Image (cartoon, rainbow, N blue to C red; front, top):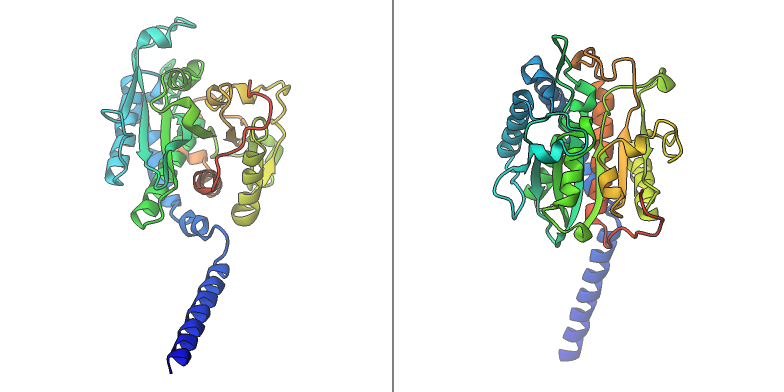
Length: 344
């Protein structure tokens, strides 16, 4: 009798183990990415961009009251979603003195601020994935307000939406393994000042920064893609890390299905886009970085860069792509390998 009971119990345990293994194998790879792509809301992107790129913000010139008002709107969004400022900070601001902003070109800029928000990692909280975009633009010229809806209102609202999606996942018990630092940088239009300041005065050690996913202009299409907005330029993903390049390719293939255009990925490209956005201040310090971009258009750096010209279907899909890249970086078992030449 005792022998039969032992056999029955053993059979039960083996059967249960087999059933459990089988059920685990049936779960699609990275199902949680797919679950949270729908958290990227076209309605929220539209609402936030309509505000960020409104005349009320006076073109968000670095250090201006209009930029500060935009900053307060961004912070209120994070507070409303329960997204905190980073550990070790006293508020949502990284203050940058005018002396620093004017040291290179002496443009008489006032004090300004980077804005940061934070989703702490569940397993490797000391490893940081930065998601960046600049929230400044060029202000008012000859009485005209340059609202910068695409440059870089689109990136600004994209990373706000990405933060909300990560926070939603955390609230539901699926928070990222590594920490996410959302970084709205100032002074990009005057020489990448805000991202340079962060790289020189990081809240978290640069050595612990795993990657930067940078978003700068993803709401329009350029003349090379007149027939479709289902594309994005991918710049820098393969410069430092073969892992980062593979992630950018694989999450697109599995979930997003954009046409990835590498036209501007060459460091020798005369446009020098790789050197002209905020990821560069991370890449030059050996941090794997990728820059997502829709290319320039007729309204680039003109007063006509307005919300009415944003293609919100493209903005939404590209935001989802940036989120998927960051999700995979944050949740993979190992840090991105750095196996290429430096990012300068």
